[in-house]
Image 1 (cartoon, one colour):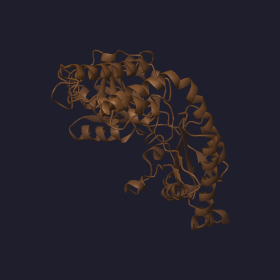
Image 2 (image 1 turned 60 degrees about the vertical axis):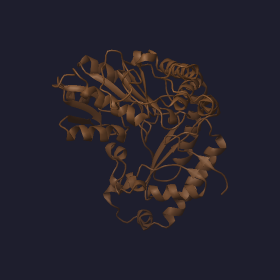
Image 3 (image 1 turned 180 degrees about the horizontal axis):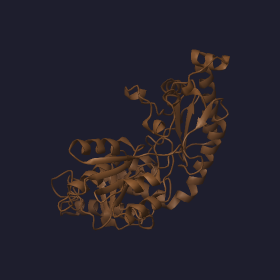
Image 4 (image 1 turned 135 degrees about the vertical axis):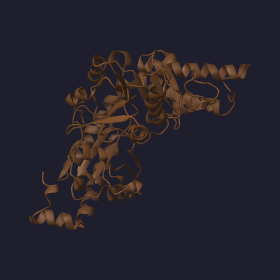
Length: 401
């Protein structure tokens, strides 16, 4: 293997040295239960308060509006179920509105809510992954409890206009939640300025540890906890706190808030270099908004290629990447995101997502371009579909551009 290039940062990120150093004392000597009264426990409580303050500062909210969770998925579940199940919440409001390109933490939660009697409306997107605002406006009604639209898509990287969505929701008298797991730390988010009522985030997407996240919930919004017990997190999420993990989240948020203007332009330059190189491969197309996208995300569809084969071949070259094709999880269905933006089934199967971080280099990008180009050629040379396309014989309409 010539070298190793990790380029799947949208899946998870390597923990940073500063986060590791911040967590280490709470994995060794600082082991007290923060709910106890003795001095060791009080030090743990101080660490939780500091992490909450860092997280709140990054989002421009109050520390008591932060609820620590086990990750983004739990935060999403708490936002949707917690609101609908809350005591005193109007039982007339039975509708959730979301988009067709959400993460499964939202989509599967919505499927569950539908099974128990709630109504879910799915808003479509355009060819670049922006939600259709006219559809959203028409869908909101007196029975709408919540609109949940992700801040930035985990596959194609398209960033939504959060303020415009929030303004529309508030104008129509409903609340707005955003799954910002991919966005926090990778773009500036001000929950007050943008009008966001609830927001989900996760530590391991910003070089923090796995297994910890948070939900921002604006003051005045009541949630029914999903986990009952000792009443931690101001009664919103019981269970002895994961102090080391929360400290790691807080440090990751602090670093992101203080250094974002330094590393985001650097990562965006790497991304653009990658896009320019990969798009030189014939019959290759960038997906998502070409400009208003996450700084590290480059997502492609490559015709006459099966995405899973491409990812496995790249792995042999030391490259970690991903495909929107769900074959890797045992399903034969292509990415729901790529289908939602209008790509035909066969082309959607040939997807490649490369997501870069601040730890990547120009040399990494050049290696990625070289190996992706080589592997695509190798796979096409073995493909009868590619032979047919190149021979000029009639192709399936699904391959037509």
